[in-house]
Image 1 (spheres, rainbow, N blue to C red):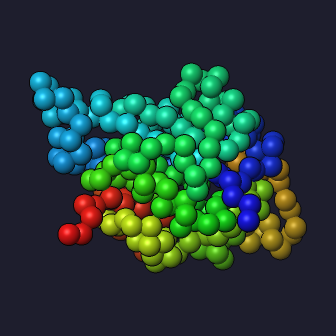
Image 2: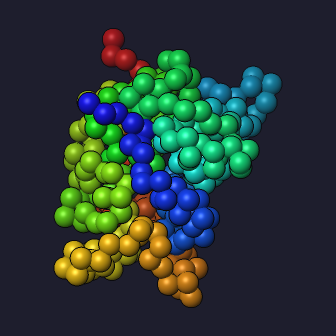
Length: 270
């Protein structure tokens, strides 16, 4: 069985990703949503108190958090994670890792199913549009669970609904698009307690469904869906997508293009 983290995408995809992920509405909006979820995670009193220096107030403990981004790609999410603590990334692609190193990010090569870290190393682990790449997604989640400290958290972001399958799924070598139930079940099998699971990107659900249906009907296959963009509206779209974070603070949405999950590594049962 071929295992990878993630299975290497077509080579041109990394260059496209590196070029657009700082400005493309999809990446900008996703980071805003993820950042909002992370702020809630680090506010956890147990997580902060566990990492705080005894001689400093609890709030300062967030600076001591160790964070791992599994499948860090070209590094934009890793840069965002760095504001919450000491963040590092792991990826299987030499090309992706080179983009990260050019940005001064701490990264190393490794597989999701065999992470090159000791047990209980990280306070927070993330897999942001990564799990869907794995031949054995439960094995990858078990590895994330292993390297996460007891009481720590994992933040997962995956694509939703197989009937939304599109060109980007093909060129990124996705294995699956999940339902909320499917990804929650896999996380629980990996040993996690799921504290939150909600669909996201409901704002552009209809346009994305329409665009992918049109591409299927016409046979149009762009090099990457990331290239499909209306420059004049890019900033507006980013703000609209980012605004979902306010709704998601208090509401689990019943559908969307993606799913966000907050999972905790609980104390083992007595």
